[in-house]
Amino acid sequence: MNPTSFDHLATVLGRRTSRRSLVGLVAALSSTRLLVRDVAAAGCSPDGTHCGGSTGVTCCSGLCKRKRGTHKRFCRQAPSQSTCTVERNACVNGPAGDCSAGGTTCKCFITTGGRSFCGELLKTRCTVCTTDGDCTKVTGKGSACGTNGPNCCDSTATFCSPPCPTLG
Image 1 (tube, rainbow, N blue to C red):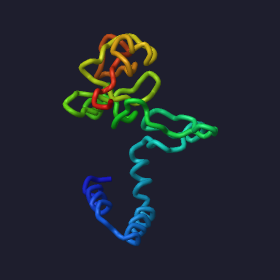
Image 2: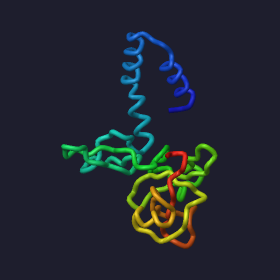
Image 3: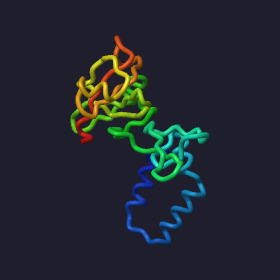
């Protein structure tokens, strides 16, 4: 969705409108398949999308979890995900992986478990790790073990990063 269309949509939705106008807007969006096209263009699926098995769905969070009491699996928000997705990896995409907020420099990473994670850049340590648990003693509680890329550590294939402090 281009920024102008999004601004117009936000303005329309922000106004007090009658039920009839709202039904018309929903019908218009449905007929143009605007929402479906924008999600498909993103390449990954948002939280709540059916995933796993033969669906071929890639969750933006990297977390496909079974719904309690069923065998169905759905995309769920990953711990310390913030605005990050599996497609916004600072180790691969550089500036596109920014999730900074509140004056703290934070970047989007992908954990060794395949989840998206918003980590505090200045406290990230290049070290060998295989699980998030390995990083607790290195960078503290809530830390994640990230997979490396050309924009991150030179000496190791992994690193430990604490969550961005603005998320807590």
